[in-house]
Length: 259
Ligand SMILES: [Zn+2]
Ligand SMILES: [Zn+2]
Image (cartoon, rainbow, N blue to C red; front, side, top):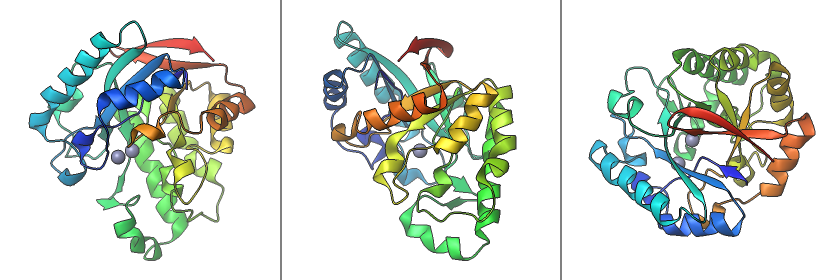
């Protein structure tokens, strides 16, 4: 991936490998701009993220890597932040980083992408779950706290698909994303999950293109060997709906590069 802005580190307690191992993989893959965006600390579900006390170490480690690799690859610093009203913390939102990814991993406190809680899909109408999910994405965009939308249609992770039209369900969320001037990430983690396709789907991506929403690319790597996996598939997906450039951020300011 020419630009790859969503990658984790062991500080989140569910990723493995050293920073330099991720970076070496990215260099091997020909990546020009590689960003770390580990799960930001939060007072909810703390076991899947770093602590507030670890923010400094994380930021310093990434900045040090940036210096060390400066003539080989451009390293950026970000966080993946959970959109969860009442639990978002100024220390994260005001952190001096290149960008913040806003992600929805919880619907009313339910960690819907965690296999531990998969049983909850049977307790509610699947279309209602999907609509609630996209309504939360819409709220996240309207909060205007973030630069990038993480894995737009993560709710499909276990392949529990709705009966209704997904593009119609996501319409208001996409319009809010456009109005918030956010960037959509094309995230390959879905290829590694039961749904076995990228986030977002081609049909949602096409809708985003028609609205003029920019994109970026994301390995969402939790291991060094996941860096740039499915690169060909994701580039082909982007081109298939008409995209020819992707975005990245430096000090929260957007720039573009052709691919
Ligand atoms: Zn993770
Ligand atoms: Zn995520």
